[in-house]
Length: 162
Image 1 (spheres, one colour):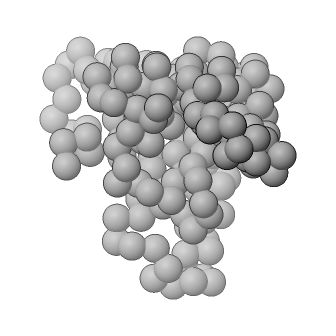
Image 2 (cartoon, one colour):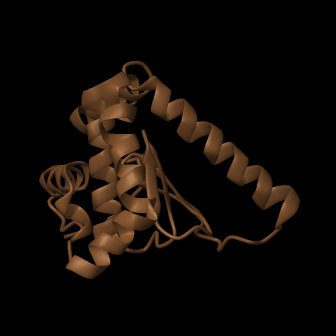
């Protein structure tokens, strides 16, 4: 699949951009990346000690510098460079979640209250789920989700969630 790639053959300019990307994520955007890393390690431990072979062989992969982990929960979540999703082969979903990764890099420590919390509430509050279903309101109509899809599309030149 073209969207998944290895970082070993990056040209010098791309390698520099990737290095700056990680530097920003693990300095300016440290809070959400630490939470993402903790969740990533927690899921690894569950996979190893509780539910051996619970994940498919492609349970962890890279998507344009982000670590993608398949999980058993319904839906997806982005915490810095760590993307957790139930459908890691769904490219528009990954593009959308990668857009959240860009938001994380730009907003830094205010990402969690400005994007993370509103997004979590919009996705999971039963009354908002019911509202979206009854009014046929698109998930990406809410500002953090629309913004993530737009940025993901602009950054990767691939279609995102609509």
